[in-house]
Length: 395
Ligand SMILES: [Zn+2]
Image (spheres, rainbow, N blue to C red):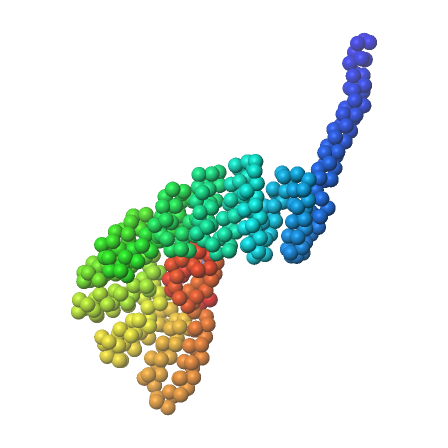
């Protein structure tokens, strides 16, 4: 019986001990926190405040004074982290020379571990890039391709190569450091298309064909490769083959047919069959009314058929899917057959419509919504490939 009472009493006896241990643990923890807090100079919070208030000059000066002080007292570890932050601040403020000097100084310090040296080198590469010293930036990042920072370095290098239009190096980089699947295949095919385009301009037709075939092998939906293959055959005088390459785009992505409309007509025309070319384009417009082919069709109809027939066919096409741009053409057609006395009014209407069309019909990047009157395979704003709408759209 006595033993049983003792067992019941154990938890009650131990309770104050548990409390004591908890209190002690909390105190030890609090002491650590307080010690760490004391290690952070008050000026650090001041610099943080300045960053939040967008006073980056105050933040940079304050951080610099902390680092100088820590160097004097031999606190290298803390100053390393702060120096990296200061470097980023300098770069953000456009003070690239200061960022470069700071990182170069850090690199020259003795006894810095390899891992830290690589991080400093990565920052220095970004300083050079920001200062427009691309060759020096490339060197820094290329040195890091065998380090733990290789993925980040390869991504930046890939960007640099694309800006430099150095497609061979870009292809090599993608092959050595593959990133995410589908989008990279898109990009890689475009790099080959860039090489093919260059060869085509220089009339190296076999080379252009080879590169375009490589692009197609990587991305069988690459419409640009088919445009180039068509151009190669056109230049060789193989018009039927050119038409075959251009029309394959219908199966790849019909929206890009707008880009080959005139080429298709020219190839048929070169074979003395312009009517067939026109029939094909009219068929495309009926099947895909969003294509920007109406003006081209009207222009070519006037070459092949009489005025009345050209007007009739075009007006019927416009009625399938009218928009402001097509209404402009319809007004033109209607007025061309109307009373001569209405010409002045028609000109006023056309002028107003033309103004509105120029403002509201553009190519647009589907990724960053950048708008332009000119089509780009690579968006100049966000650097993405094949994000531009191949037809001008109402924006
Ligand atoms: Zn974009």
